[in-house]
Image 1 (cartoon, rainbow, N blue to C red):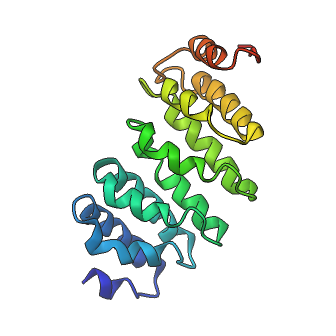
Image 2: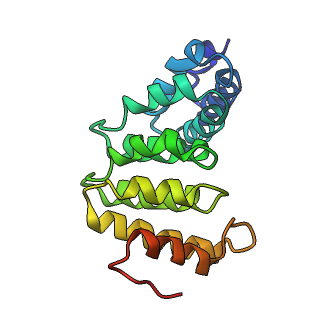
Image 3: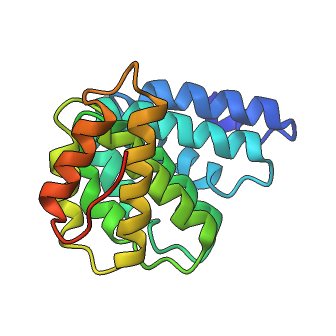
Amino acid sequence: MLFELFSDPNFKVRQTVINAAGEIGKTYFEEVRTIFDEGLKDPHHSPRNAVIGSVKKMGEVNPGPVLTWAKQYLHHEDKEIRREICHGIELRGRKHPEDILPLLQELQHDPTARVRNTLVHVIGQIAYKKGCLIKVLAHLKNWQNPALVEAALAEIIDVHDRYRNFAALTQVEAIKLIDDYYVDQKRKC
């Protein structure tokens, strides 16, 4: 029934199909995989946003097949698909950054500002959760794009202020950890 409804001309119907497929994909991703393949290319932004949201939810509880699927799109010729995949894998990284950091690293030299900005955003979003900052910093040490790493570090510091009521560390504690990893560049609160 979902596959039949997915061809509906109304974008709201396609968006609803993707959301329903996301619920199924939490357990049975392969059965709904083609809906996500097609949803990434939908001409309307709402179904594409539903893909992002569904990938977030599915990746959190069914990471194996979802992250394998996402990896194939990291170098897609369409910059919006690369951006959507980057944003979609974010939620898994909030508890298991080690699962998505290698995927994010593949985007560190992306030529599109919108993709890079999303990448920096995602890094900031995973770094403020309990136990995640240390893993993020250790991984960023091996990246080869110093400008992107510096932007990510600035975002991490900013997120620790913006989300101070939810962050595992204070901004000062986050800066200290960053300074411990990047001793040659002291930051200010």
